[in-house]
Length: 234
Image (cartoon, rainbow, N blue to C red; front, side, top):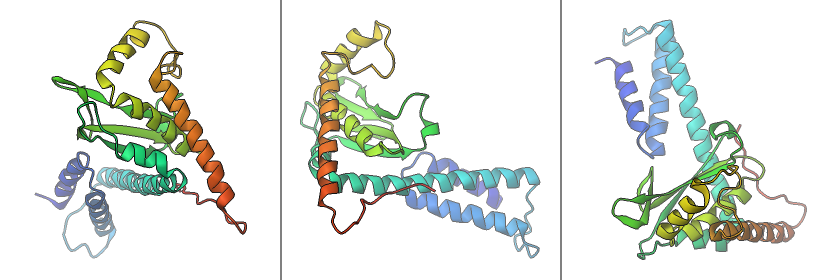
């Protein structure tokens, strides 16, 4: 089995794991293989075709982008916790109707990765026979949040937290309400979840307002001309 095939197998495994360390190791290995293939003193004796080199470079770019946004997500989430610790702690301790803790996974991504017109997306589904327990791509008792990394990223996160705050402990009831209120009618995508009787939408708006108030207090507390920390993806 050649080194390139081994690396491709490793890449496929990374696609199904949340380990950032595995991603970084794979990136280093990919770079080493590419550098070795370009070296005149190729010790492995393995030659890559131009097409293989292009594919390898593409995978390197993808992994670098993944790591960059992973690190950005860490920075933005830490910033949110500093600005609005109460909102953060409310979500960090959320439980479903059965009293089971629910983990919320957050990912900030490039705006191009979200559907046109969407700036944030929350994923939670009912799990098997238990209509009150949710799951996402991260497994049982989890919720997944994807937010476009833009100027309003943290406000959008607060808004999604509001939806989660209501829906997780009321998942079965809200799922029925959602089907009855939205699935059988025609709504704009940015209106879904926000009709005048939707408690999830009301709490989401409230969380957005609370974050905005926390942000104003945070800005006011900064002295001597210092600016609020800003994380960016380059």
